[in-house]
Image (cartoon, rainbow, N blue to C red; front, top):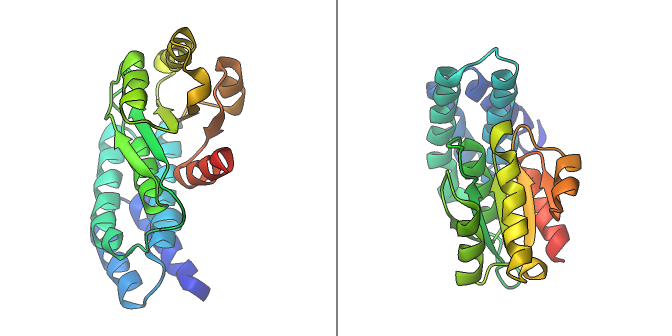
Length: 214
């Protein structure tokens, strides 16, 4: 298989199957054979975690399974991350990222953070359960270009809109690009709250930001 595509598929399957031992073995194989570590994370580990997330939404997997999948994914990340060729092109843009207040699910946010750092962005991680005003404050303090907000819960989606309202109230809306993502989020929702973009997954977030900032 060219460029390790078969290995990446196996990595994805190993994450979904909660097989940490296989993830470690396959990740080491990626490194030994000189395949692209970023692609292995994107098409392997991240893809597997996204598939596990879909199974969670379909109630085939529950929180314990999701945690074991995440443990397997992080075991692979520990091996692959040191071998990523970081992008050095141009001035680094700064992204403030976090999970909105009321939600503590941060696996997806962590994946987006890793992908953005790998792509050369400077990422300020606010963590999870972050109040709307903290997004705005941090963006100003860090002279950010982008605010990235995620949630996995429908009950906290309205808080994303509050971030944009706070920026408008402070006369800062034009200063920052605001993107949203997470399980229940859609392009339609992003449009309704006035966000600049929506990303369904970690690798699309990189493409979206490059487009918004170009």
